[in-house]
Image 1 (cartoon, rainbow, N blue to C red):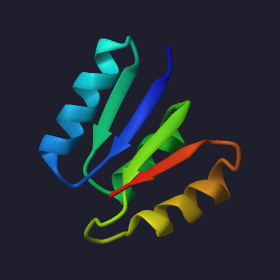
Image 2: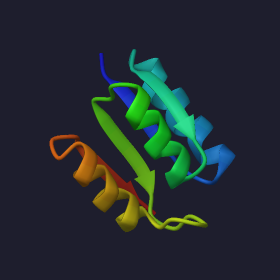
Image 3: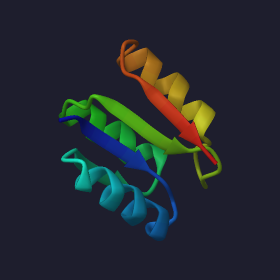
Length: 80
């Protein structure tokens, strides 16, 4: 199955997505903001990133742009 990085400042949203995706056999890592996401992507391989749009510090569109610079082929889903 897929390795999924979930980025959301809401602990409840991260846990909910991790639970749902984990039930389908996906390996899910959850982080609370864009900076943490960039650190995780630099140190591990993910098949997809699911990110919230409205987060403190770095909005989802900035995270997407920075991820595209690092890994242009990495699929990113933005939720709100």
